[in-house]
Image 1 (cartoon, rainbow, N blue to C red):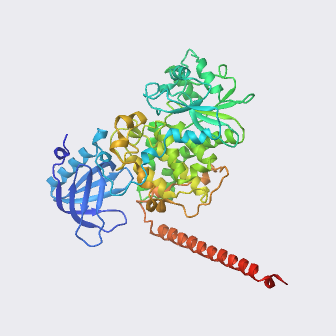
Image 2 (cartoon, helix red, strand yellow; image 1 turned 135 degrees about the vertical axis):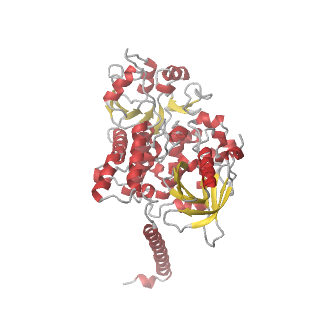
Image 3 (cartoon, rainbow, N blue to C red; image 1 turned 30 degrees about the horizontal axis):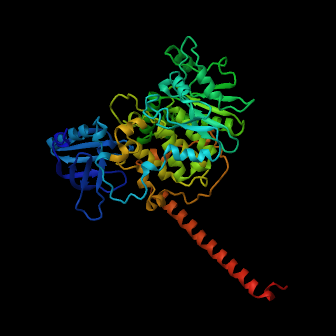
Length: 549
């Protein structure tokens, strides 16, 4: 298919662009295969380059001979284009709708994008499982890297290399895979250096109504326990939902078959419930006419903060079991690709200071989301404005980023990265020129040849000039475990995402710049103090009389 077939009118002059908190611009609108571009001959006017894949929905209105197209984006931005001529307006709208809903992944922009920057570090090779395993080997010899899934046939959503107990062979893993949802047998997620406890993740066991048993599965997870120790299974579903799953062939670990494991059920919502919550929240944030009571009522009705609380509470529980109880943990829900990953990745941010660095956080996203099989292609197909009926869309990754922001806000000096880094990840998960978030699992990325045909987001992020913008000026390395508060009054609305297009950030930007200036000035003064102290020490060494009273 040629993109030209979908573009009915490639160019229109005299188009007026309206954007939040920016001056109105008149210029020429051009449509390409991947971008909507508006350029103006006015001085000091920034061009608009909008990826079609970032467009969630459009609305058309007509006032006389002028058509208005309201473009609603996946990054929650809303812009308006005033287009002279009804036919041109209809053609542009029709073309945008067609170009923004292409189904074929290989037609997306990352396959056509050529970087304008020098790739110093290839992000596709930055966070390989074998490299992460070398760090694990330096701490323990009880685990091995298995190639049982090298052709993705044992589990289609796992990477080709997974860390498993050294005492468990590949034949055992194959048998366990038939007993777990989607073949997702228990694998290592995190090793706690302080006490040797581990966190694993998996899909639900397929016990069914007959109480099916798998001794190989019991052997695998028991292999992670120390003598005389118990472990915890954290099921991210309520007991009722887990019971209902039995009728569909799923289930949970019975205490009779897993006597050394205590099962705890938590309630983290999935799919449609989360998508509807996002839609309600964005709707509440977009309406400027609310009274205080109505605004608070709509915010509460969205249940977004409730979801944040449930996820953080469960992550804190997992971290507490590992660090304070000295117990190993297995986390799963149904598939093990959504709420499970929220919990395992947030628990690591709480426990492991390395995950709070820029590179460490990239490694965490790569390991616990991309390689672990979170279906980005499906979950991020629509955002809050889409008119299509939700299928598998859900803001699972956005909720994770929101939870990270909540912890960052409570511990502002413990993170090397700033809020801008989290916002950037949200934007690129939904629409990007990079191939990092394309596909839904490692097998997809191999099949699409993403490392060969696209550029990694990490290649761009890890350039010095970008890192400078994403670094937290308040950062001071903190080796301690950090325990976030999940009290309702401690959890705030993430204004940097949900209100950034609804109100000007000028004052906040100025305050941030002033803070950076004060920190830099403080560093200068500290350097001067240190220099003067060295000079004084040198003088005292050279002239002993200075030391006499």
